[in-house]
Image (cartoon, rainbow, N blue to C red; front, side, top):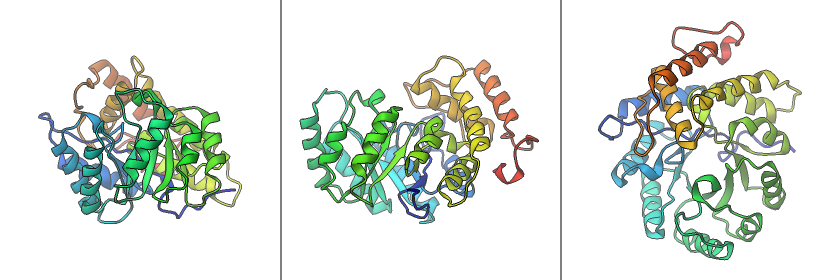
Length: 319
């Protein structure tokens, strides 16, 4: 059954990059430009301080500035999700309370990283954390960075927690995604969203609720168009839209592939598009001049460079 595109915890929710100055401070001009860019593209929410937002690499002050200024710029126009994961529960709770006071709508939590805990410990950890969180909470499954997957049975055991309203899956495992959909079907208010954007069309067809797609920083409208076409009652051929998303994904393949390189290339693409700076937080290295040239070529082909367009892309999607 197709999902309701009007729910606030569904749709396309870009994991915003964190625009930074060369000194590692928050670039407020870049942040406002980025938020207005994705809002104009029709996105359904904003996710800050996640993986793409380099959350774990930012100091506490910059994290709080990102929360405060994102809420100020968003002005309640769409929900704000904030990643609060830390190795210490007290720090996660502190950031969540700050986010609630600033006006955020959801918090997003991963398993604790560093110590390799089991699923019994993980369940206890989430229950202890949830008891202190002030906002509806999305679980975030990304074992490639946390070193720990949230097992389907762990998700099932947490469904009695009303505060848990969904899960973002960035594992890239479609079998896992299907299992979570099956488990979550007992709760109409539980959303299951996908991270890897090349799986967005497939997961929407399976009944997924949307995508937290890094590419939506660069080209938000194409992801929104694909989502809205997928959940509409009409039979729409989404293959051309999906093709553009696949082409956009070529940016991530420029140079050696890694999660950190993907973040740097996303920022470089945004810099080329004159949206925000390409500065990254250590240990993430910026892209080099050769990579920048190739990323520029991909963006030109897709009509993403200001003042240029691609004849094969409908004008309504050049936004």
